[in-house]
Image (cartoon, rainbow, N blue to C red):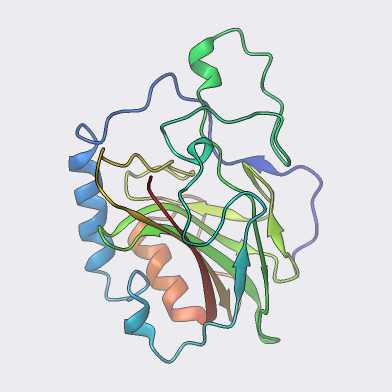
Length: 218
């Protein structure tokens, strides 16, 4: 259904500086309101109680219940030569080296009827969505670090970007970061950069199974 293409895209561009959690509060709150008022229940597993949690989600660089590595948050620089990453270490601008990457993920246990895969990365406690990816090939079993397959699409996150938004936890506060893989009946009828509400509603409508890897803040 989805031909394998040889040139995956990176999940985001380097940023000279990440805004602090305080300066992002307005945008995050607006995104959270949108997510919570869609009625799709995708941020609250209990609302989709009949959906099986049969998908096993893992990562070679993250562990269930353990802190999210700094390279995947706004707090630290990514190791550009890590497994699956793009080698951007030739940049002469030190600020550009401070790039947080999306982490590598693997999954198994998709149902036979899966026609596509979607990924949602969120903090369910504050209803903030960091990343939405959909129209992933149902034969795919992993996402490499900092890449999205060329035939997949990224929707907007809570701050309105169609990219991975690295979490920026407030100091001394506990946060939970959930990487949820959804098996869908088929591809979504949505363009690249669909609004958060549209993508979450479409994913919830098409989802037949799911599974999550949950990390936390330090």
